[in-house]
Amino acid sequence: MQSDNLEQGKTDRGQILNKSAVTGATALAGFSILHKAHAGNQDVLKVGVVGCGGRGTGAVADILTAGRNVELVAMADAAQAQIEKSLSSLKKDRNKQSLTGVNVTPERCYVGLDAYKKVIDSDIDIVILSTPPGFRPEHFEYAINAGKNIFCEKPCATDPVGVRRIRNLNSVVDRKGISVVSGFQRRHTFGMIESVQRIHDGNIGNILSGRTYYNATNTPQKKRPEGISDREWQFVNWYRVDWLSGDHYVEQAVHNIDLANWVMNVPPVSAYGMGGVQYFHDLPGNIYDHFTVEYTYANGARITSMSRQIPHTDSARGGIFFGDKGTANYMNGAMEILGDKPGKWEGAWAMLGRNQEHVNLLRSIRESRPMNHTMILCDTTLMAIMGREAAYSGKNVTWQEMMDSDLSLAPKNIEQWDGSIRPVPKPGMDRS
Image (cartoon, rainbow, N blue to C red; front, side):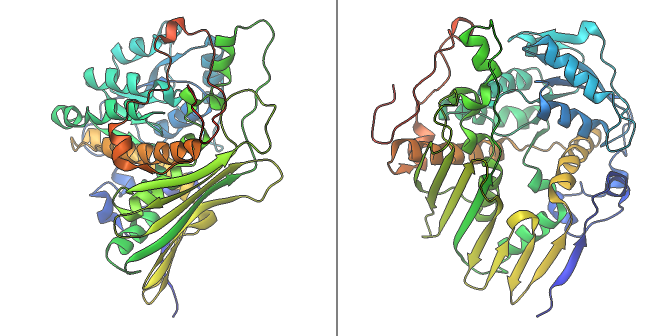
């Protein structure tokens, strides 16, 4: 049967921002008509960013190009040099467009581990939380208590204690009418929204099994500068430190774990997995370079999640889900349903979603219709942590065990932390 081409996505930013209507709009509850994304209150929305690395800088650029009357007015990072690097990048042309709205004075550039408080306490409407995720629970809680709207990068924590700290704020978010939008950009991509809705409507029947992949050839590597302490080095090398990044399975593969969480629409009952270090034995840090985790659901369905970061290997990213009436394929940029009721959506989902998530955030604020993704952030992050812990331990780990777990990876006092880290985990052995 011929597939119906429901969504002709565009990759040019100007075309994206001027598109008038998109199939599947109902899934975003009115937030999908891009050229009206700035309707209503036209007062300037002031943005602050906490964490000025590549992702924070990218998120700032996305929000500044997602709507009119949006300004970046405050920045925080542990290093002054990182703020300067971010500002330099933001002031350049992006995608051959002049990036306007950068209105940061030196007095509003804050440095240090407590700099996030100064940004959040300043006169901003939206805070972008984009530091290493080990800091996220503390920053999220402070921003919610201050009544700020949040764009929160994924994941929201690196351990169950951190997830629970954020989960407990969900009712506060609702009560205060705050918007919390996550960095799970697939959930803002029209083809993904339409196709997942079709899955939920039964187009591929009962899901029997699935697979997700985040197999990449790259892994962030940094050379240790001379003359810095162990503590300073671990902050620089954060991606390879468990309590700061959560391991690459939690920090990056979480995107495709979120796809499984969205498609299945219910948490798994348990996880069983394996992983280890095959390639980067001599690289500093304490994380794995490969994982394979099998999630089991209450209805008997099983989703296998694979993640690898090893050079000179074949890449694979996305997911595929098998039902008793069809298949949903999201591998390597595809968005299609195969079976009796096929559908195919085209477009660069990553770019579309990265911009649209900010379009949706701005509109939710201007139209006083808050979006709250707190539980999405928490459930997907905990699912990733659950899989990581199954691989680390070599044991079956249940969802309820993770919900109740007192596992906390962060040092008890970060200010006094000497930079020491746990050894690389070995399944079947105590890691304390």
